[in-house]
Amino acid sequence: MFELNGKTALITGGSRGIGRAIAIRLAQHGVDIVVNYVRHKKDAQATANAVQELGRECMLVKANVAKEDDVAAMFNAIEDRFQKLDIIVSNAASGVLKPAMELTERHWNWAMNINARALLTLAQHGTPIMGEGGRMIGVSSLGAIRAIENYTTVGASKAALESLVRHLAIELGPKKINVNTISAGAVDTDALKKFPNRDLILSTALERTPMGRLTTPDDVADVALFLCSQFATMIQGQVITVDGGYAIRG
Image (cartoon, rainbow, N blue to C red; front, side, top):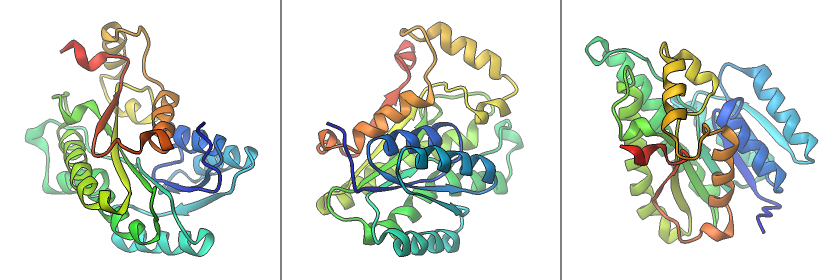
């Protein structure tokens, strides 16, 4: 029911964690994959190997999604290789973990450009080669709506991402392109290792999650697969939360 044979997907930040899980899940259902990365080439190659073992094509593209020239070159390469694009997953994320009073303009702009504005640039370059039935997904986090210690720039940028998704959904809906957000709960990825209070975050999330376990990258990938399928045609401009019920605990 979820076969997507013949489709091509771009996964930004696709070398590790949630990005890798989404790339593999889509490949399992017939999608050729473009893995975007910046620094982790070995990890990106490992993702590509996993995709190719599933019998799908995988193209690696090194590009900083915060730089429009990089994004333009990336889409030129995608068009040369595949002639089209059906799915865009804006998953690449970064940010500085500091108290709000210690943040600089550079910290703010860095997070906003990578976590929020990147989706706008991806949409502007991707829409011309994306036909009816295209899918765009922004990957967010609960920090978009909750105050998390030292998460100011990332949380604000994720909130901006979710707002951008709603505006893109209105503009791209008439083109039959679906735009939605997946908001993940506490997922134990490499990114979380940068938090000084990582163990506390995970233990608290586990204790407060009704389903009794933490969210995994595969859980997020399953929802991405659904949003890319024919069953999600009338889901537009929404935030789908994948957290085992953690957010409803207040």
